Length: 249
Image 1 (cartoon, rainbow, N blue to C red):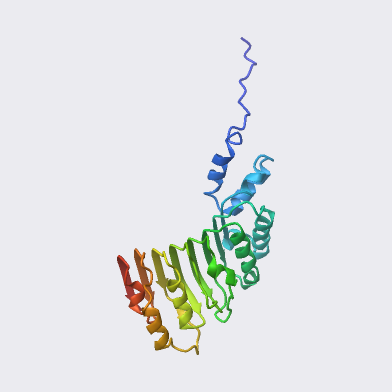
Image 2 (cartoon, one colour):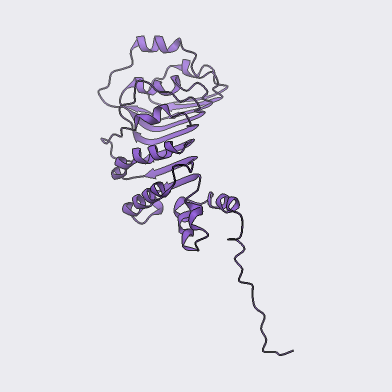
């Protein structure tokens, strides 16, 4: 046998040969930025990241805000309307993205969004008016809002499928807006409220409103609730909670 002969290594790309369902499942564990980067591997990978069900965008993983904004828009606009978006997590520390948030939310709602996680850190005096459509989303099951100044919540709020609601460091325009969430979530199971604030100069909630709200059987399916805030929130909201954690600060 000739000593000059050398053994060759197989060049078959076994990973790319896996079924779409398996590859998509693998990509779902990565931030969307990294999932998108796989499109340069080969044509085989390009349609996969565009069909991901779970999208995760964090501005800190990008070199600058413009790149972050470009990638989010590219992902949203490149998807077919028939392709569902099960979850969307969006984290930004720029006020400039606020103008685009409602566009992202509406695009996700058109695709049956079930899980929405927003964390937008902006200036203290900057307020975000969320699209009214989000407050009557029929598919949303999980809603998490953090570091948001929310303004102008519609009179009618209805989350028929919402089971998890987390509000962390959210500034509302008035007391009544806080009540609109738990009063219109008929099957809510998990409620977490942390450091809620009310805009300066807003009126305290009226006794009439509290009286009317207390007559409603709020959150009958509530399993656990966590409350930590400076505001006085009537305890009747947590009457049916099996596990209740209250921290007064």
